[in-house]
Length: 161
Image (cartoon, rainbow, N blue to C red; front, side, top):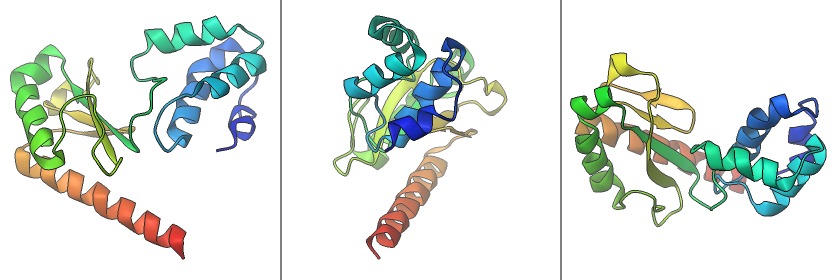
């Protein structure tokens, strides 16, 4: 991951901090922001490291701890909750073999609860990386997980050749 190349896509102003942090986190194979990266962000934006940490502490989608390649955020808004958040969490646990806030053994998935994803019309919903999936059933969840596993396997095979 070329930190400087990612940051150079933005003018060095605090109005770009969220976009920079999201792009840096997305580029990291474990979906997090290591301290050395945060130091570079602070330097680039001419701000303090504590200011950068303040932004990360406020936004739950940002993390300073390693997670997994794909982050699954389960919406727990009132609408999603009424429509089956608990069922979604149980289906994910069944298909992935892990609970909340822990990586799958292959490092491919991490499941966490999230506040509203703004997709009440398709509740219950999850967000995987930046993609929304709604109107979920256990079968749909299984199909989504299988599709992502298959894509990830193809990416690894292509990178190996």
